[in-house]
Image (cartoon, rainbow, N blue to C red; front, side, top):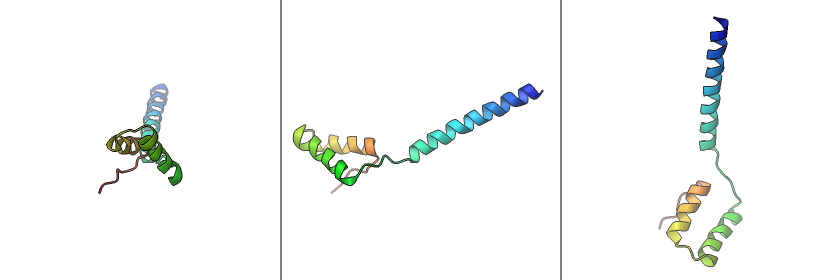
Length: 70
């Protein structure tokens, strides 16, 4: 009985830890200094000649930024 209880407790702790870790990763923002973000954007546009839509999408996915509209 105590072995089953220990196993169930271990499983519960493992599940809670995994859920907490994933939630924290989703909420955590990858922060780069504004100047570095702007330099990366400028480099991709001017040096690599990538399309602006692609650059905005990539930076949004990478850094969690929202694309600039307008």
